[in-house]
Length: 277
Image (cartoon, rainbow, N blue to C red; front, side, top):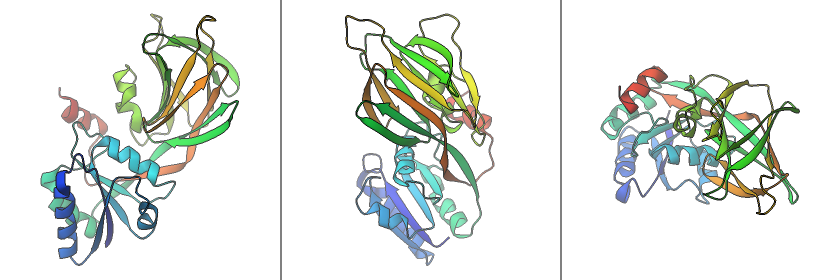
């Protein structure tokens, strides 16, 4: 690899210290590098078309925003963790030099990560978005449960009263899904995990669905004396309100996210290192 784009989260990479360091090191090795601040820059689209890899300086949130900014491109991405846990980021700042050497020498592997596609149907029309981690239907009010009808391939599956419902990819299984008590999944698997958030029941559990299934979530009326409003969120990056009768169809996307891995370390070892134990 000889052409790199460094995308910096300026709130984590103060004064672009690490981004500028990486840029200088890449250029020392007769390769090309440029820096883009933020993942929603107007110049980002053109920059992505002319590079072989993206280096992200930030945390998991920055990686997720970059996944959205790629808009279906298959440019591989590697993250330098400037955040806290960093399940999606591959290296820490002390490993930047070694990372650059290995990228330039093509000493790495690329993993294809499954994404979700969600189509939200409201009276105002349809909206289709993708997610790398999860699509969440949650309550709009912090003090009320929401009622959700769940359908699988067009057939009624369940009705749940909870703070919300998470539909997670394997990559996202270590995110909100994990916090809500959902299972951890090998990140290169192809499946979907449905996990209720604080369900009003003692028997609700996560359910694993296949990559060919279509999951539909419908916001139901819980009480007639209040306005029932829900919130649909895609990776926590894009969200909007929905109302009773609105639905979201969720399936495996035809887009993939390519993540660069320098070490063939299993997800369970990563979990042990990140979370302790």
